[in-house]
Amino acid sequence: MASRRRPAFTLIELLVVIAIIAILIGLLLPAVQKVREASARMACSNNLKQWGLAAHNYHGVIGILPPGINKGTPEVGKRYNWFVALLPYMEQDSIYRGYTQDVTNSVPPANGWNNNVFAPGATTQGGPNAPIAQTFKAMACPSDAGMPGDQKDTTQSPPQQWALISYKGCGGGVTYPSGSQTADGLFFMNHKGFRIEDVTDGSSNTILLGERNSFDPIYDSDPVLNDKLHYWGWAYYASNSGDVMNGTSVPMNFSLPANFGTLSSGQRSLLVNQRRMTFGSGHSGGANFTLADGSVRFIRDSITPVTFQALGTRSGGEPISGTEF
Image 1 (tube, helix red, strand yellow):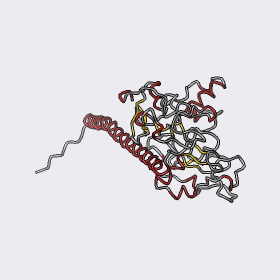
Image 2 (tube, one colour):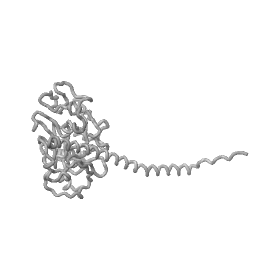
Image 3 (cartoon, one colour):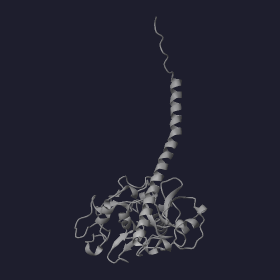
Image 4 (cartoon, one colour):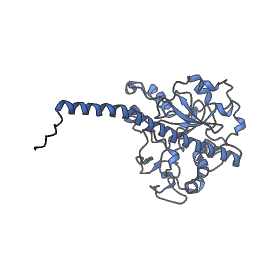
């Protein structure tokens, strides 16, 4: 007896199956993206928790928080910042020991003190193995879309390699440019450092550290700026404060407008200064922050400008409710 042939799929049936599969993929992708973002947000939160613990351990040993930037004072002859100071408390002793803080016994590079390009007595530029080029996991947020995959800037001239960071200290309302600092936060230039007791606004209502979103297509593609926004590293601080400190007078995730190229030079300069000191993130809806008590909070983009600026001051006397952020 001859066997019956099994009927094949018709074209219509095949198209129906493909459509069903496409629908299932469409339903699944958002869920996968949500899981991925939740994981990135948690990893970022853990990074900031580590930095907060490091700051409190430093405070426990030294008696104060580290300075935002020590640029010759109050420790004469030394250049370092809060990031450098906390390296030993992040179990990064080797980077800390290799970093040149003493500028009185070092050969400066031709373009000025862009710190630690030279080790004491050295005459060659720092390369991929130099302390300033070393990276570790807690330096970068996984959602920082502007951060190169290797967490390094290799574009500077003369050729150098710099490790980049996604996290900044809070210097108060205004932190950039250096001469415009309001100095009402916990980190700023040439101050020895504050005690937690100096935070009279309350340590749970004051920002210590926060994220910085490195992605800004208008900034990065502007031919006049000629400077990738994410090229700001923990060892750049010799020239200004924008490298390691941000302010809260600018809304989170502030970015340059589409008509930036048509504006006057004065308008462009103001917007660039604001963009360079803006907290923000690649997360959806807000950014992670470490408060002065060491806790980590996800602060929404929808926070009012008044409340956000108040969170940046250590002793402004502004009343803040925990429900406001």
